[in-house]
Amino acid sequence: MNELDVVGVRVEMPSNQPIVLLREVGGDRYLPIWIGPGEATAIAFAQQGMAPARPLTHDLFKDVLEAVGQELTEVRITDLREGVFYAELVFASGVEVSARPSDAIALALRTGTPIFGSDGVLDDAGIAIPDEQEDEVEKFREFLDQISPEDFGSSSQ
Image 1 (cartoon, rainbow, N blue to C red):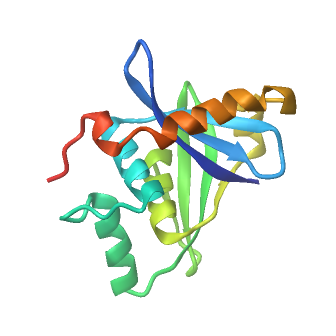
Image 2: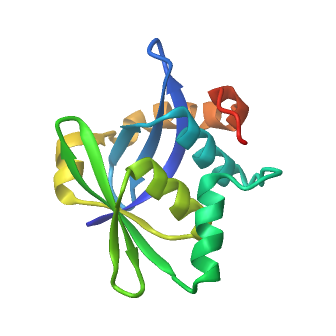
């Protein structure tokens, strides 16, 4: 397993499909995962430290975990089968729960939990970006600084 940082979310054109971009800590691989607009909003809210007037699903889940005394210790992106990514939530009690990576990432950002990607997933879907291409990633980060969660067209209820 390799630790991953969340670079951010953006909308891929022309499909108008949101993606979350993860970066391998201490490596040169990036992992793009296509996600839904609701999860894109949840991830963007967490990255920007925004608290909605009413809790989103991931905020509620975090609050429930705290209320029942469960600690999320890590999120693992474990597999990629037929274009679908799979993840697991790993709790301090040893319990592991299957999850969509987008939900797992949104929860990890809210709880400060580290995110890991399996070697197989990074080998299959990771994109190596050498240092000389890092300026493209910097442009992506600048784009993220100018976007707001509302740009994803999802409404919280």
